[in-house]
Image (cartoon, rainbow, N blue to C red; front, side, top):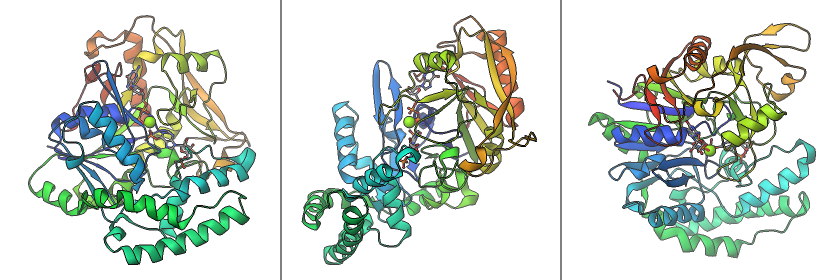
Length: 432
Ligand code: GDP
Ligand code: IMO
Ligand code: MG
């Protein structure tokens, strides 16, 4: 019986990871986030209540669930506390005492969004279209070994030295390169002093908690953020986020051992969306795409930006299946395709030179001149909204799902027919 399950996005984010992580948490004891930061926006819908979590793991609505933030996450303390207040106001119990943060996680400081904005402005037309939350610059500092970590707050004299050096570097850049206002040492220090005690009270050894949980046969859910094609290595570089969003990132970013993972559940919409810039072969810039955006309410959970929409991309999925060693798939937002005459699936890419590729390239520039090769399937007129049994689905909807399964090579474990918990068809629950 699987105890350690990864849930991750197989497209460009916003696949519905939040709904599935929340659902599966009814059976999990621990949920851990391993990468990303408050660029994530995971929507949880219970009854007529909607909660969007950004840094807090999606297990938080289940009152006995322990929520961990691993070393691979970039933590913006102000944003975290705001989120905790929102959850408290929504009536969620014992929020703060159930969140444990790794001392090795990176501190996202007020200077990081400033750098993010400056960098995007300078890129002009080539902007990545980031969430503007400072995620990339915070990871840059981490990798450059000038970053500050949550655990650094135990020794403030040492922290101040590190902060001084970091700000000296970043302010030089802000002033001379981006021509933006600098961020003063005093203001950052004051901010940090205001959050320090509260943050340190949440610090724990995340890797050890996971190992103890595993030994005690606890059910652990690793919640991915963003999606496979936003991965820093395997995404459409440079139009990506700055962390490893693939299954491997769940291991390095949490401190769990790779052989302790029992099941990897990939989340995908039955179509695709993307927020921000970058290649997107199956994008629909027409009324069909507009219809999907409207019916699917495809607007960013973090920035409110309209999401780009397009047909399902089986070429990208082929890569997602192998990179993540997907055990199963959760296919989401089935209901959004209700009422369409025709549904297309991209089964191959036609490259600039006319050759056909079954796999996506590794860099954005290689997507130039690519056109999708489509297979067409008839749609269905009936509503699938809220259906809970496979047998109740329209025949054409079943054929469509079967075809997606066949093309991906991974079995469909869950089908989602609406935003709420019970609007779900289970073909195979990963924790059973
Ligand atoms: P995440 O970032 O992967 O957690 O996904 P988001 O929360 O950003 O976006 C997914 C959106 O789709 C949310 O608004 C969900 O409430 C909604 N959603 C999830 N599953 C379904 C579904 O099956 N049908 C419909 N109509 N909406 C869904
Ligand atoms: P969840 O977890 C969708 C996108 C941004 C931009 C790129 C880089 O809700 O699926 P960043 O701010 O990370 O440097 O932006 O990544 N992006 C997301 N798109 N869902 C997300 O998170 C995203 N997080 C980042 O739009 O294109
Ligand atoms: Mg989202």
